[in-house]
Length: 287
Image 1 (tube, helix red, strand yellow):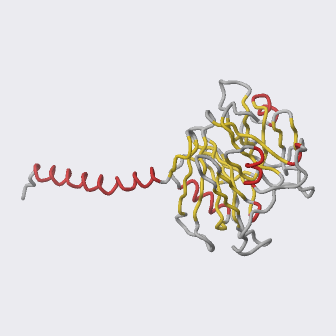
Image 2 (cartoon, one colour):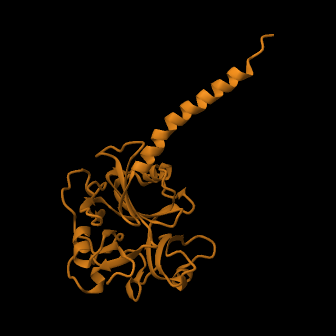
Image 3 (cartoon, helix red, strand yellow):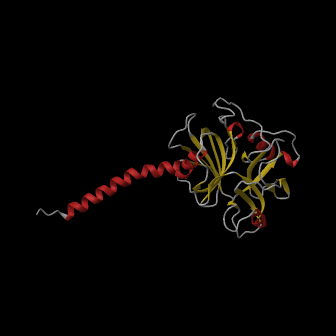
């Protein structure tokens, strides 16, 4: 029987380990390079979908926000300062928001949020509907997370318990249930998407893709990214899905187009007015 040389075996093992490390380092560098620091606590990332959609560049844009440094806020027509909707960029510039995203779907009066929405002492819609996802902020205590997305069907969770701990809450359709479960049923409809997410560190994620995806497919794309996503809610689709970033010298806006069957093309070239946005300001900044 021929005996193997243990020294040669060890040398081969070391060489394979070094080769694996060399191949792995660029992947680490690529993951790190995906995030661009715009300001302390605000990072912008762009990620290609692993399975490209049928239209557009299939890029997923994510703004990652540290709620320890930034306050999430709501601005909308129901507050009475404006009489017509604006784009996310226009809302941001008028109300000193560093970034903004469409707050969610709205009713036929073009001002009322489709689910429950309370921002501190202001109530946009007091009716709780069947939507299972609630984003809560303005924590009433320093001992709980400043921002959290709740599942209304989780044990011990209700709108009453959420409002006991938080003075602001926004109810929307659920995309991903904690801790990372795809909850959107398979369907043929697809659209450009604006979404709100939370990662394992409790950071706020403003998520946007102009390329249309079926939502169950987009959920799989988001969960496959190395961003620690634990839950997410649908905000808006099509031309009214918008994201604006105006911090750290950036002046960037994204707006959707495709929304099947409402607008089945990628030709939209402008942001549509929306009645409500979620935005961010530095903590303790003037309102």
